[in-house]
Length: 374
Ligand code: SF4
Image (cartoon, rainbow, N blue to C red):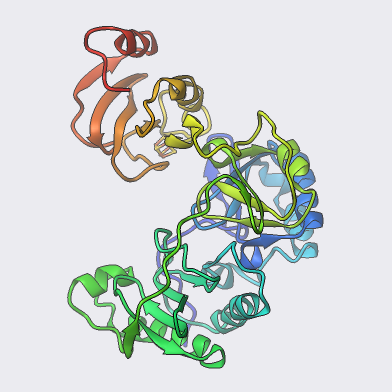
């Protein structure tokens, strides 16, 4: 079968241009980094890029501000760390999210076996992905994946995203059935690019689906039985922060957090309090990092965070694309021509309630009679 990854998704071998240089996105194997890999990445982020690192919503990690002339040296160093694929197509296919709450040989073995199976050429859309969610409970249901390996009361299941039930499988048969399902999608996608969309359109994946996953909750910041879950505001961390967290192996999550397999002291650079209002604000890099932005975003979002009531969410977006939070928020501030639009209960591109707001006017609104319910 000819290799042909449709669409485009940035990676280490296909970095993306941004206003502050190249973005080099990594997908650590099994969504984990050893302490030595994390320390080396912190050094590489500084020596080859701006030193800024971001966590992605599929447990990816990206180095920002990489200089084009530094790219080949960075590739060599990543290869030495075991963090580079053979080619861009293999890298794009290796779209696997592995649960942070398992370190059992079975879960890590399934993740490695799936990675090996995906090294075979297979036509799948760029964002098509897999979740190995086989800890004691399935906690990745809200994260992006099309084919899920999960734990049910009676053992493992393979489940197609969009279906409530999965097929009971043995550990030895699990990867084969997951790949059967991927091939079925390839042959029957009929223009759909995601499994849930195909299922919603009425297609029935060929699974003997009879078992529901044991559902668990996403990890919240704080101490857990697996280590300390540390959230990073906006999923952003400086190289020095990564270095400080690399006291043990790290498990990356899809929730802008890292599970450190050790105790972690408090720091203004990270969040371990699940009630911290900064956890309820989203903001893209904004100006000047993104060429589409006409406003700075993250500083404003952090300044507004203490004004949020306990359950309220805020999204500050550099433009109407809304990359950081492609879902409704209670309040969204969208940049347009150097000012802000205010949208209530909507996405960044929804019709605004207020337009042309300066930052001073946003602060005045917070105190005045027109105050949005922040
Ligand atoms: S939302 Fe707009 S400004 Fe923000 S990162 Fe996306 S494209 Fe750039």
